[in-house]
Image (cartoon, rainbow, N blue to C red):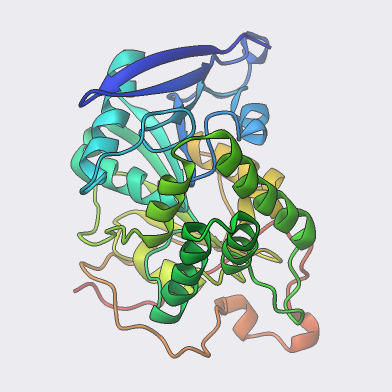
Length: 336
């Protein structure tokens, strides 16, 4: 296994850093692709993606980062953070000396990755977005504001519990693989960040209160969007509608998982991302999405994702939860 490299950069006077795990030279026979930059949520710094190292390390240089406002980097200044974060990603690409990269953004990081692809599509070879928070309802925002008030009052334990539960599906009638393990891990991560980073509290407030922009569509970048089937932050239906605004996109749901699908289905996610970035086939029914210039109206709240294959089966013939992933093509609406 090659040794990792850590490099420090600045953008607008803010210090940040990135880590490169060079492609494993022992994997010479494996298909190769452009470097893969992984951008996670507010708590997922550059050392939080070992499963990506294991899977992607055979096919690409794996790059992770503490962007401004994340991990060990300087905090973001007041005002819009998106331009600074895009510039920071561009700085990493320039420092790597490569014309293009593959880009993977999850949760909060999906907004950063999508914005980078919109502003510089020629520099993104392929794009993967997971757990995309395209729409946060008023009730969910009110819930997180209660959590933020706990933090302002100095109740870090109460904040960690509320914030964790607000990011997970706790419905006992919906099976979530490794739910309690993921729940404990996320809660501990909140508490660890608050105890060991002087600006973690502000970063968390910003991530929970931010309204990322996923409008405007995208073309020229092959894209995969995936979601846990029980994501309660933004429903899979909403995420599928967002995927429909991206030309040449695919959408997949992974069973028995919620917003923290990267923890609950870590091996499956890593394998899926690796296949997409190396141009290998995905699920046979992961058909191209019809491109649309804007998302359609929201479906009724009680709607659930059903594949064409499932619609033709009886309940007894439905796909088992042990299946790697379950595809949800967008409705065949005409482009607008």
